Image (cartoon, rainbow, N blue to C red; front, side, top):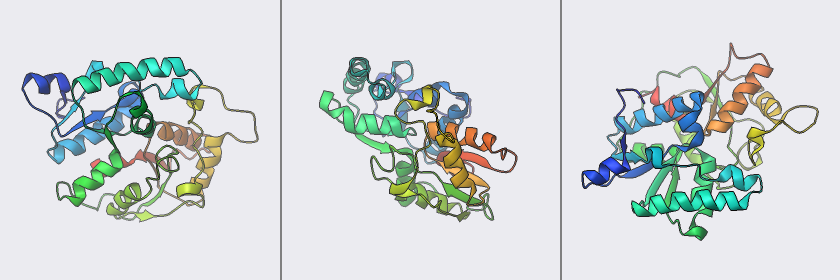
Length: 261
């Protein structure tokens, strides 16, 4: 993180005898992928602007095990999950916010059976909560006149039925919001789910991410908004395949809001 961003670890909070409002679960992509790091920074900028007392686990955070589970390695998943749960429970964590729908789904729906019970919130839901509570506001001028469409991440949309929060935030930017033909519960996957991010695509007439990007481009957008670092990568690659990188940008919801505050 840059020096302008204030980030404390849970270890630092405990040393000061304090507790944060939320734990920001950064996730593997948000920690190591150069593009996804920008999403993490944007979200931290928002938290700082709203004066949210938050913490990260830092080096104590490990992969949730989502990829291992989707690839069929249940043993590795449970090993990774149990290590994380031991850390989270040790700090008595109650509320977790993450920019990654894969982490969101795993922490929310699959950790409880292993002893990890937390309130887990996607960053779009939390940003909306900050706005609803008057802790954060946007200028609404940066993207005025721009056309934005939104790609629903599978693990946020169909898996957990979170559809409204991302759209409510995008409309706050005062951009022209246009839905793709297939959206919400009918949205097409970006092609990265189920550990597909890390293997070559299946044989077919067109790669899934290229097809999904084609559907987004049919709305003639200036910006394709996402709420997932993996979707961001897949849609960005799709833009390049369609040779539209000079005219269309892929941005996370956190980036759009951070640029508007």
